[in-house]
Length: 283
Image (tube, rainbow, N blue to C red; front, side, top):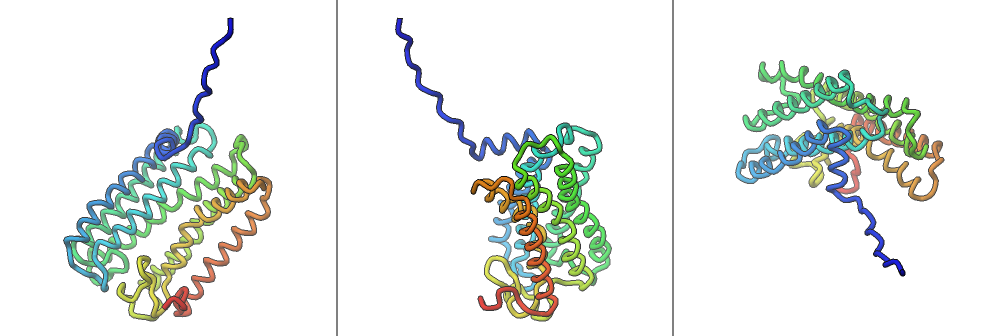
């Protein structure tokens, strides 16, 4: 008897739903936080369309929208990278308490920034009103706490000897995550000490680069801060590209790019402190 030839099963394709299910399985708290923050952008966009109030020349809801997007990307990235942690890490009580503290800090930041927007005032660098002046250093501590998650992940991935990914990719993850905290502390700490992000210039949102808002008439420390917080994306992305190009062992190349990226961040930092705009030729 001749056996019937059955069609081969269709290959499984990874899509957004597959990625979401993996994130939710590996780190449910950070995955849920990322989704909530992404959805939170919708009502804030609606608020921006119906609320005409401006602060420093910019709609008052733009800042909380930017923070919601940034923190959604941050927690989604951690949820994706959680698969590279040592087995059992996310189930430990110490880790769960730490992750809960990070999410609490994120919630506090969003409430603080959103409340300031609703009241038509500044959240950051607001030392003229006693309540906001008192909240500012507390929120600075919260911001530091939530950023430490990147350093914790870097340390845990570095010590995971059972990890079977390409050496270049592991190096990219460790260096990218590891650089995020110190570079962010330098840039954000300087803005806090100067009580503002602009060095020279008007500091008005109307004078900023389209969409991003970086100042064109003076130095803007937010440029260096932006790149600092995204070290956890840029360096691993380069490492992943090397793997795709067939160079999974190119650890030294990843390390050199990580050092080069740090130099670039510090270069934009020095440029801002000198009162010069980033990409001045754009106008």
